[in-house]
Length: 206
Ligand code: CA
Image 1 (cartoon, rainbow, N blue to C red):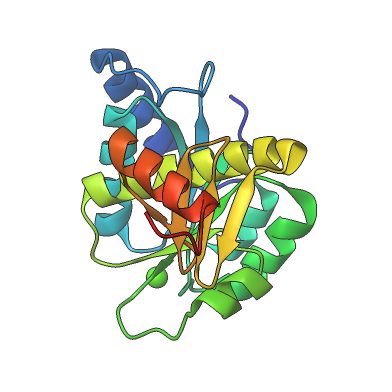
Image 2 (cartoon, rainbow, N blue to C red):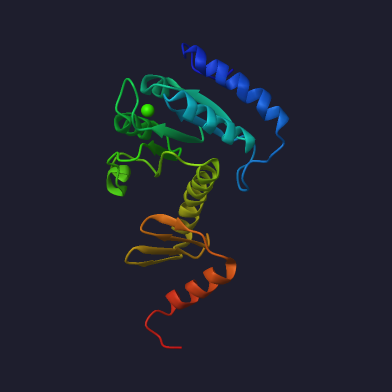
């Protein structure tokens, strides 16, 4: 059991539930992730937490669930953190800043509709993305995969320097990803090739 000492009962309940569901679902982690991908879920709303855990486990992630900021800061290292903005003991923003000081793991903020979290605030506090509740398991998976891909491609692209930047749009040739206003855009291979070709020849007439 790799949980930090002193974590509350619900953590253990949650991870044992995770364990049994994990064994019954033989789904592989997203490509590019070797071995087990450990996700820390920080969420005080029980029903949201349950559905998120269920979705993650069905996708072969190993989940640790805690419900306060204090527990999040006491938890062991994870590969990705899903962090509720409205926590009972601390402001999610402060939790995010503190986590960011000691981990490079991507952080996705979970926010309620109407909460003021714009892109800038998110970036200032060190979050990689945010998701507005309610969200479907499918949306959550897409966001998690996009964040992992961005982290991986970001380091590849930084090495290779193959990034085309336009106002509001970034095209990463090495990772074959496109972002518009900081969010990933899903393109087919053909669409990407066409966009990349045109972007690489900006200003030319064909
Ligand atoms: Ca909450």
